[in-house]
Image 1 (cartoon, rainbow, N blue to C red):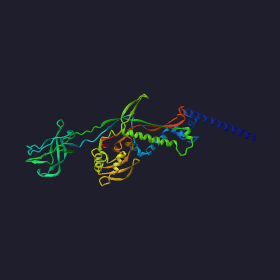
Image 2: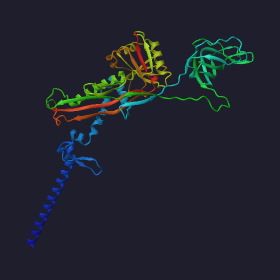
Image 3: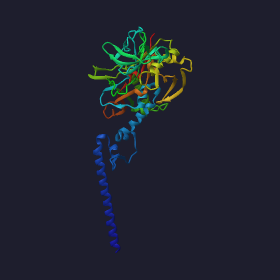
Image 4: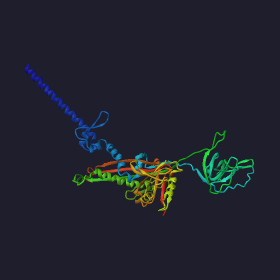
Length: 468
């Protein structure tokens, strides 16, 4: 019996040994399969560390998780972190790029971006020929008024004549209200409107006669007035205007030799520090293209390839305010803010960026109840100075890009709501394996972005230009 027990123990031990041996064979087969599956990714160590999960995920076993392994198994993981960090790298030096990244970019399916912009319909015109009241309406209160841009007006609209007094209901006493006209019809070819006065003169039994309206009187288009039986009115359509811009491919390459990386250094200057400096330099160059770039398609004779250049928003702005150097006083600033905030359907909070000369002149203004210099305000990751007026608020910031481009006395007022960035290739990094390729013994990455900047509602943005 004892012999039998010993035999059974030996048989069980042999069976257990066989089981372990079979398990080792199976494990080796699995690892070899993983190696064959991932060998194109580069390296036995990386392939053997990767295990596919039950839901298709990737798992790491038997070795530490490193950045190289992470880039191999999940290439987007670290790149997204870089993209999130980019808005924190010296944001005040590149305000346009910062604003666009904070708001987010639209995905562009092509390097050529077609977009539409629309502005508001004009509301102001002028009288091009004086209308004189001769004291006899001859029973007809309808007159032909010559105006600039007659197509701006439509029948049934009311028009305010600035600076010309209307009359009281008796039609004889001049009132303090401006004259208001009612448009009966128009003749586009003749450039005239058929109008009657709402608060005009009374000539005998004829009411609403139009008094004298001087040359160059300003006409302000107001609302429409329909009669009780009116069902229809003049049609109104607004068609956007098509524009085009090119996405420009921005690139920056950072390299560090292996000896440089392992060498002892007096300070902690790492590859990440070099990367941050490169991102700043890249953004600074992009900022200049976004502002003052010229849309073009050129051919590189050395590369024998086409290069697309993006157009800057400086040329896209629909308004311009000019001033003379040294004459940017409080009254001029109020006029500038009036032009920036009125007649363009923009918001009441805009950004003013400018060169050191313009900012210097703004800083020399006294703080008053009309134009108040508010405290600093942080928006979009940028520390602005605030200027407030009855028209709206300006967030003011020095942009040394204007100085570098020879425009230190110029600036630009931008409505952030209508600043749109298009991105064909979002900001990404790509690691180059120059060692394996036999090129250089260095660690290298390339930063890439293909994008452009556009302005919607061009009239909502204003160039500030110094003449003389």
